[in-house]
Image (cartoon, rainbow, N blue to C red; front, side, top):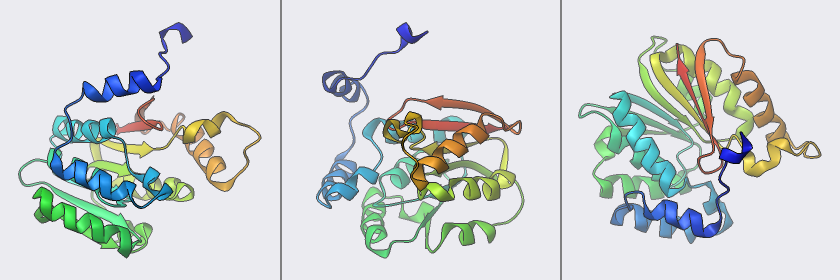
Length: 218
């Protein structure tokens, strides 16, 4: 089925972005401010990924969402905008510097009242959550070696039919480079290998941005 795969050239990617709804002024300004941070700005999700997260939250009718790895807030805004009217998003990050930017843009986007931001190790924040399965949507985009631990703690707290989404599962192609034995690459490979065998979820890995896996709790 490789003939069904279309490689994204820069021109084709520009076409793809142009045929998604354009980001509003808040997200455009946030992207520009984040880009000014330098190479670390690559941690921000892509335009189409943000649109996808908003749509996914709406499709789920999500009222309770958790984000692991907030950075400067683009994904948080995207998820919060897709929540039901009474929805709440819990954002977890360890950086006061980056989340200070996120807080400003949460307020400017008009979603600050929907978001609780915890600046602390995410695993501690997750373990303090109720053990009941009430979360509709999870987005994990943080330290790669922590992905499996976050998943193990969060899946029991996700309702049946809820989604756990993992970013960077293709890891810029390094997952198939067997000469790459770095800690992060090994962690992503191990996660991918585990998820495809996890009978608790239905699974799809999609080539959105740097790879996005969706795990739907059965």
